[in-house]
Image (cartoon, rainbow, N blue to C red; front, side):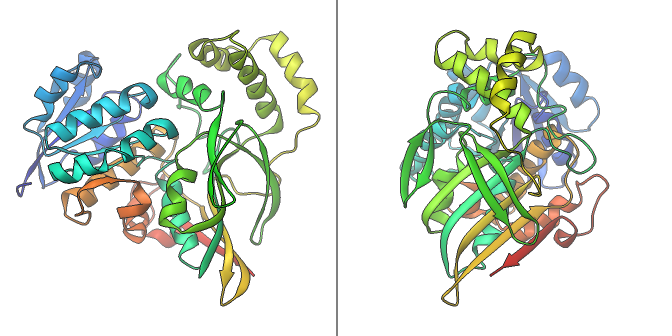
Length: 394
């Protein structure tokens, strides 16, 4: 990289990509920020707001066009989805173009496939950070803060909110735009089998399994598993010896409805796209079926909405550490896009130096991450102490 860089925001006109463009536009070390999107009208409207931001029409499924676009770029930031379809080919195009890369991939299957491309990236001298959004991303940074206070880490759980109050609004408000990639992704990771970490090794199981957690100083509650990359990356970076899972903080009635949709997808009665549409337009019949199931489910109780929980040993004694967000950018789009811009900053200024394919917890500085996240909160905060609270209970 030179002193001033060309950055490509792939999918930059979308809900998640827009906050990335807004956060990076005007940085002194970026010579050109290109919004690469198939929706050129939306890209042009966004680009018109910022001097030096250009538009590059692209279909993210076209590998030839991707290589043309990446050839002269220093860094590509990928917010297109769903990642279980597009993540691997886009990273491959970046590696073959020798272009640094970061994304918000929250599917565990392509995360494993992309991590397996580590040797190719190292040989090409490419830095790639996968899963630098909200969850994974901010959740990984919370887990890093909690785990580093333990001498031995036995369990790590990361949790994110679905329909519970958080920082003044519902962070799922803008997670979708019609039948969006976000909802298709969600149903993909709430159906079939998912991977977690159990007994010190990868484990396959169904999604939406209840997990009872006890958060230091706040109390207990039940959360539900979802297929995310964190339990496959955190065991390595945090040296987890026992269990790890990514869970949703969700009301029982919502969990019951999602279980009903999961069952229909697993039985072949709904496609992922149809299930995603059914989230936005629920039917009375599905509500009735889920109401019976809801009677046996428990809720999040006194658990915080967005947190990581690490348990293990400190000075030879059992110890629990929680790290929770107490402030955040408003809305899921900003909660996801802003973290990607923070990862981009650490790549551009050389904080992240090692070529290869990495999870965020492997290479990003969590203290700096939360210090910089503070400025993007609504309203802005002055530093990480106003964004994250770390709680301890022996």
